[in-house]
Image (cartoon, rainbow, N blue to C red; front, side, top):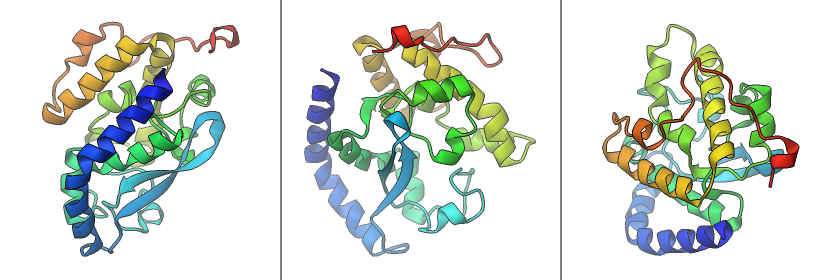
Length: 228
């Protein structure tokens, strides 16, 4: 059923978004570095690498410049149009192609780069490897403004991600594996849309009062018997 929803959703988005996508593609083609799409290697189910689609919002060589696959606040690698696309998450829309191909799903843990995946706790890594990554998820909602967290930290960006972001994000993804169902997925889709227009909102605490808290008790991963 989830796969059927993914196919219908991705086809509908492609059809509805095409009138807006075409002018965006034209502007990207003739500005910046002339690239329309950026395909970044991410880890999928079973630890298999796939190329995740995004609109090209940063310099093409960004992975080899500065913080690499971690984006900072006011990152100088972001192109002028890219700032707008990233603010409203429009740069993520091409990932419906990955959903249509079966590499991603609508709701699930966000796909990670190999380096950021390595910073997660071992139990979270084991569970994430069993999941199909999602276009949106509870971790990406809570950490919607990840760049600000890194900017406000006294630690270097890699240490901040490893010590402050990855452990809690891992707890959130473990929570999702324990609680995932169609109703939870629907609420996550609603929250994703809500947070685009109200990024400072904490309505997720009302909708999901049992979410793990920073520094709270560990969320136990699913046992092998409990996996589906």
